[in-house]
Length: 389
Ligand code: NAD
Ligand code: UDP
Image: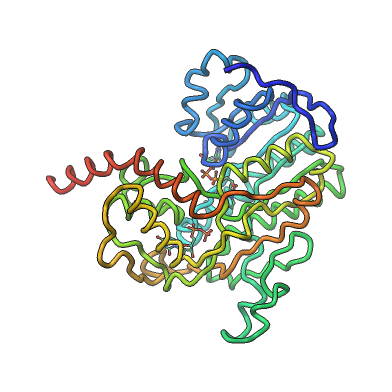
């Protein structure tokens, strides 16, 4: 591939190549961001993670046309003195590292809080002390529950956008009680957002905070028993993909009534590249990144995935494609849920002119085609081995 040509920012100025320290580069979002930056820009990436499986094709070894553009640094940011040096070498740090699967929030609350707050502290500190720009990944979960969720079920105000649309600089953060340990993640993310914001206000840290709203696509999480632990519980896309690959019913937690908006990872990555290349427009802002047009209940998602998978695989759906499970059976005690997540898009639209493009049906087709191609054979082999033993 030929090297990408010079790029312009949204104001028509050339973008100088940057060195980016990307922490958590080996994860789902990081892998797509690395691919995009390598394919379309001249930026250099220092990729930091404890794993590189999802970016192996870019770093182990780097293909010749990427020589000098990307390097992998295997380190745990909890306890590695090389971190500050990497942040100092870079113009910009992007922190994606986190424990971010709901099955962990109520069962490993200490790890969740340490990962999302304590371990992120040195990253913020090194950026602030060395006057380096920081793009920090938070979550839409910092909004918690909608105001409308506290109204009676059939109350007309529940339909009014002021009661559910989530606005970066206006909506409150509404979490459940401490015994509902689900909120340990949201609370840790909220506190690190507040700390970053305060570093900006008191010490001039140049920051951008990203709140992803259910970004999904290929390489998200793992398929239990294939490239992750058999008893592991990934996020919903991988749970439902796993059920479909194994011809098991999809499990609907507490009736599958919660609502989510899903955005295609490749659309969302375009928003991140705009943030990287337009610091004057992105600094000091918190951005929702999601697709308000792709709203479904979890039950509707299960129905759509069942239909799309039947087309992709040519296998007829099961007679009973879904079953209900309680949240305490599925996740254990202390689980709670966000009821509805519609991102307000005003700020990202105004600052970066970004809009999501891909409808849910299309992104599920692409993603389930990938899941079937990547995992079907491995799942078949694993199932025949476990039935033989
Ligand atoms: P992911 O789990 O795929 O990626 C996180 C990566 O960070 C992993 O590769 C992990 O190995 C790495 N990591 C974790 N702790 C580390 C440590 N101590 N040292 C080094 N590396 C470490 O998750 P993702 O979906 O790519 O999410 C990235 C970020 O975006 C997270 O901060 C998450 O909270 C946030 N987020 C994502 C979504 C989404 O829709 N995918 C939604 C809300 C928030
Ligand atoms: N969920 C479900 N069945 C599953 C996995 C998840 O019904 O097998 C539900 C979960 O209870 C939540 C929604 O799907 O309401 C989305 O879960 P996910 O793990 O993707 O993360 P969240 O959006 O809650 O952060």
